[in-house]
Image (cartoon, rainbow, N blue to C red; front, side, top):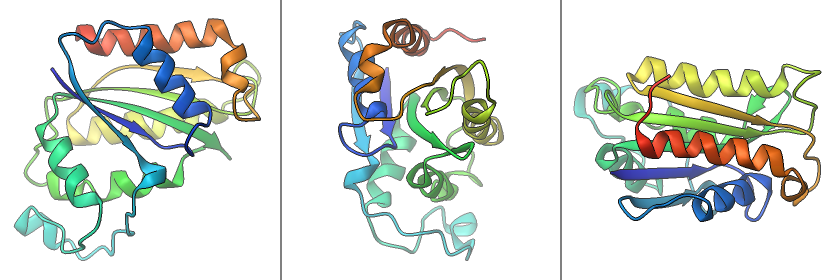
Length: 185
């Protein structure tokens, strides 16, 4: 399996720490994976020209070109994103928009994905994190990607808060494991 891991939070934040925990807690011996830390990438906004629908390529030259190739070559994707105002990370939204060159050709169809979102609110009392997860799930459904699972982690205000949330890290690890095992919900 070729796995593309997208981390949409700032370096060493709760999203990155959750991803690191998931990697350390799962057997990756049969997995060829790459990590894209969006905080390290220069990705321009989609300008809506839609020439990629005809050509299968974006005319903008930036770090997204390599991500598109990586997504095209992957079998599965794992998204890790912080949540603010019921929204996924802005960096992730821009990246998802720029995957449009793969839309018309349906080159994402048949891939699998999971989403793990980390927010400040309490998961039981608020729908904020679930709305961000919905955004990723809707993207996957529209792209023909099988959405394997999701995990919402709340009460993470400061960087490192997720490390004290052992039960949530276990849930995230189990969600990630479903992707590695190819389970379908």
